[in-house]
Length: 103
Image (tube, rainbow, N blue to C red; front, side, top):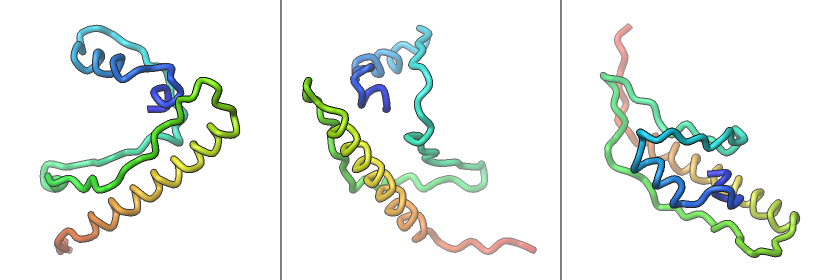
């Protein structure tokens, strides 16, 4: 997503990699602060199937003359949007039924 936001990758590049997994592609290494572990499931504890996707993100400004200050402001806002998304997701997951564990 980072390279997509900076214009180093296009949506077509990503779709091509998904559509043709047999072709090796190196998208490089992204800064870890943009990565989110979205879910972990176990055989006896599956994640809920329904999705909670009632949020939107501000698009990356794609002005050719975009200055560093504009990019920095967008990145700061995007970090806040990610944080908001995570808090909403955690509150959504908090509505799951309580499961008592055996001692």
